[in-house]
Length: 334
Image (cartoon, rainbow, N blue to C red):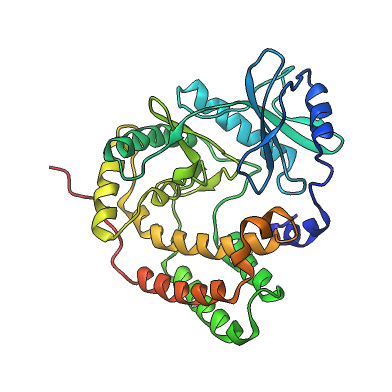
């Protein structure tokens, strides 16, 4: 089933069945007794809760959104996580209970994790950034050994073509902005197409923004829910911020650690702005396709406001300009 078909079919789905009693019985079905309440954690795609069991150990349970990933796709994510753990990469991996990491209760797939504490990764801390780069190099060293079979590969179809169709069929864009919005969106897509290039793909974290990195005695990577195949730079560009000079400095520090374990071809840097454009379009479509979920209007009320869409038209223009600037480049090594 294509991702666009999923956009349309899961409109009838909601998480209403996930009552506290339901989740308690789901956990009990795998021999885990929740003694505390279930504290909801920050997650919109799935439903994630922290709790304490009868031995006062803290766990996190994730209930997967039905119709999003198949069991085979979730299993690939879990296998990748455990492969990383086996290679001493600090990552929040699913727990195996009775030999299984995926469990099912009345149609819901769910997974248990240890609760990993930590503070927020400081994106402007260059020492931390180099440390993250070193572990990202190790993640990619493992990820390069083979590709996912069941999980998708980052590309134009899923990230811009299908989202464009979804946005066209939606009612979110104000009537007075439709012509400007879709005209500039099509210009952005054309520019992305012109700058997109084939690149070696590896297994990726897929969504490695700073919020998915905790800090304790070093980095702890969490949430491989968006793991997929793609170019290595996908896991690096979201760690860069500020103006061009800032990004060059951060990239240099990041790669100093990264290249101890993995190589990054200079051509990969040409994909940073196309990937940023893909994420921009995909994000809008993601919010649109999930709007029926009550958690989304509550968390993103600005999405249904005309000012948001006016800002997106400006954002398209800025991203088109960024695509036509000279790409970042690696610093020469002496």
